Image (tube, rainbow, N blue to C red; front, side, top):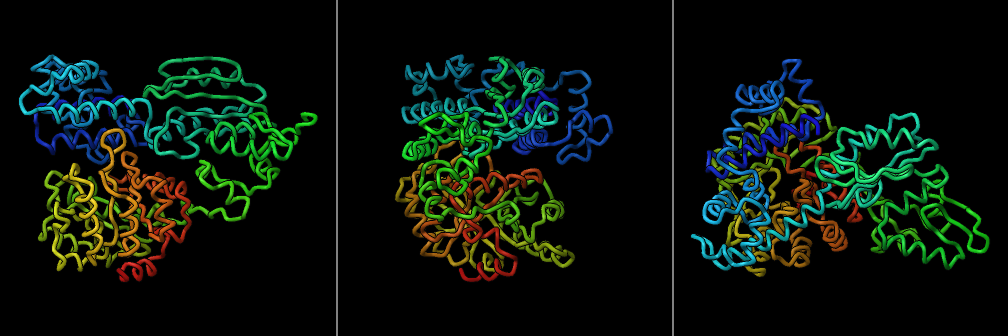
Length: 573
């Protein structure tokens, strides 16, 4: 485990204990933010510490810097050790179960001695929870549902976590002289929103050194299997990683086979049989004499079957093979097509960085524009902006824009959709903004009709340009709201409202299925990183993955418009 991850885990646990102790929310957020920063930081924290530059890390003040130093110097943190004395480790894990907040975790431990997830499940199944103060039958049922989500999350990891882990392993193996070609495969290559395990494929004629390096990687917590052509490790994040080594002349066939999906591969094999061919992970063979006619690269295999090359993100047997046969495959949007980001938070609300810092980072990414969309006043816990503070921010953005070249800041807000569908910022102020994204942040358990109607009313507002994270899901923690998504898509088409692809790895919302449906109904999509600190601007890549899986081309995304065309499009609403 790298020191970055190790320290991030400590600060995450500190935040959890402080939640149970009902500490100040801003103190808790400070520890959560530094944990997130450490997890996403490309440089090793030890290197930064040795050069005396801890204060240059966002969110590291004197107190946090002292704690980082103590952890690096001694391997322990006295403050953390004292906190742990009051709360068993298992109680902290309870906070990872949806619907178990700090108050309930403390209640379960003090009243029933529940200090593990297993004990919590047993107590819920025996109906011991509903008799506790403030609980009841419905609350107990919610916790049982939360336990099911928890189990699913333990089996699968969000794309963001799995992709970073895989890229780290590829970076370790790629420089080896024995490695000819290397690629991520499996559902991770197809960029599914959650990943079961990681598949990596290598071509080499001398796999011994590669396998030795692989099983001794710093990421390896445990070696599950070790062989000449296949080995398996378990990382410190409990992700299984399978490494396969194949001959160069089979790389394309193996990559196609192990990328999947299973349904896509079966369809290809059925096509091959009709052409008196057979396909497997070793190549394409003539049925009559087993003569190998392809296998080195994927493109050739598709070509032999009479197909255009199909991008990995499309390989789900959802019409991509028929589209390839009829030359109707979409030209998928690329990262270089992205001109800006529509969902960014600053330190005006619950973000970490100043507007100026974000602009510098966005400029380095080549963006023409960014939208500053802090929370509005109803979201008190996030320091939401009331009318006065929003007007102050508008003025500040206008001042900053006067000195900028090559990039423009869009004045925006993530306005809260209240229980009755009205917005918590009046139209008189919304019309002064360049862009408005509206979102539901409360009342998640309302009935389907009421939730859908809330979104309808918001989309009918002439100043609302985008609906943020439309289904409200948080992967592994909260299921989507009970809304009629297809009706929402139709309303978006009628009202000329864009739907967001929220790129945060925890959300990935809309999902690819609904993105494709929105495309087919003529609804524009807008990717928003939902960044709360500079490093999260890179979440754009996850939003792009959803867009590609949803068959989006440049014309289907607001983010691909030039600044002038974007202005014209926003004025239409």
